[in-house]
Length: 227
Image 1 (cartoon, one colour):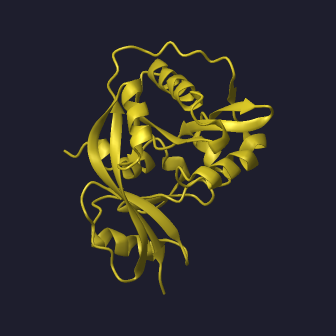
Image 2 (image 1 turned 60 degrees about the vertical axis):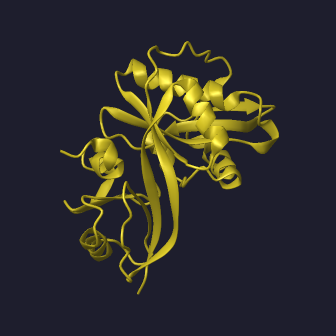
Image 3 (image 1 turned 135 degrees about the vertical axis):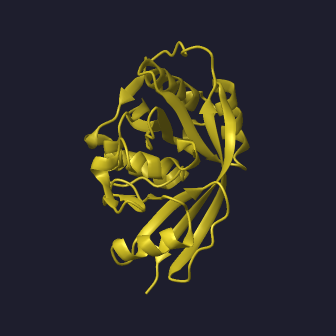
């Protein structure tokens, strides 16, 4: 049987996130403004054809696959990103100091979107915050760093949108937020995981320092519906 982390978006959308999913048994995608991700049962051309049939015009999706996928001509491939999937293998719950960490909510969304646009950690939409548990660090009233949760193929919970404003790099903010994120996930008896570009050496070293290990390679495909 396939491991849920081999196809984390599909298994999230068919379980814990089924209430915010659209599509069919074969293909699922998040409702508008929450996330631009789709999960395909087999990551096959047939699945992509099915996604084309059930999705709105001009749809743009990101989907993940462990192996290369042929993209049918009716979809335009905008880009593909080679990534590592990391899973937490630490032996202890981090003794994170939560002082200075703010729980982010709807009033912070504009600042969060601005930070994501600046740092490009991955898609973040107007209602992405509904995926939960976003935390940040503010410096002189300015959002300096943040992270939150995204896919939840239970019992695995993904940490996502990890980013730091360029003016505040090197101050340990990302490390502090990630420690807190890992602690919260472990205290719910869940297992943290995340994805990172395989050429992002700085982030990879940070995750390894925290107790994450590479589980597998993963490819992110960004596709747009053609007419």
